[in-house]
Length: 292
Ligand code: PEP
Ligand code: MG
Image (tube, rainbow, N blue to C red; front, side):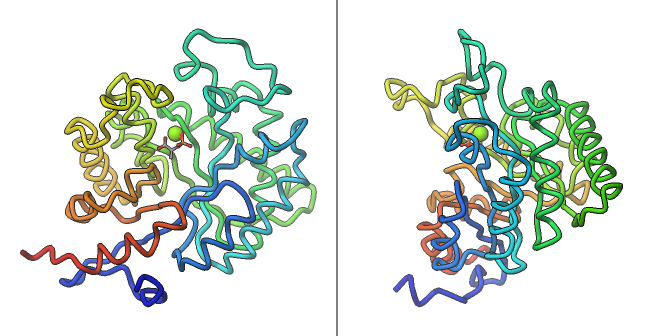
């Protein structure tokens, strides 16, 4: 029955439409994305390229991967998140210090803004790949406007360098993950800096409720339906739309069909889910009537 929903729009009975994209961790996942008829890729967790490597992946190695994903998706949107390493995702060659609170530690954009050589290799690869498809760049774990401005500055530096080297570059849409309470509180200011937000409900739940998402003992307390989390999502959508910024969800909660109606009513523009959930979410959207 789900197969029959392929090529059908993600539209409610009363005409509200939403994009349903898919999350991936490597190139081979794109087969499942296409098979399940996702409208695009809402989150490519690029850190898996680093985790599957013995040493820092070079610009050219990364370029080949991003180009392939952009080409395979044939003009559909591909949102690639920059390196989100640290905390639960560790690679020895980074030589990251042992930390008492790794989830609150040296990770993601914090590493990239401190180690420009690592960051620039990825950004250069992304800008080059953007010449072959519709690539968006998304920065993770943002907590301030300064970080976004700094990341965009490094990106511009990369663009200038590539142009000076006569390398082909494409245009990219720029977005950030909203996965810290700080980002929610600053959503209006952040929305002026970027074209889209993607809400990372896995981390947003962890940081809002002060509950380690890795600790199974805390599962009974880790509640992404907590009203504080849902209110944060709603605040983020309102702030973003005030500033012409589109908003999606790429955390696990996006696939929770018990909340699909809530998300549509909040005005979310996109849900990015694991490829196997695309058609289930589409089915739910198509069964809803928001006029009631
Ligand atoms: C999230 O935090 O919700 C998210 C999508 O990122 P990750 O699960 O990779 O931390
Ligand atoms: Mg996250």
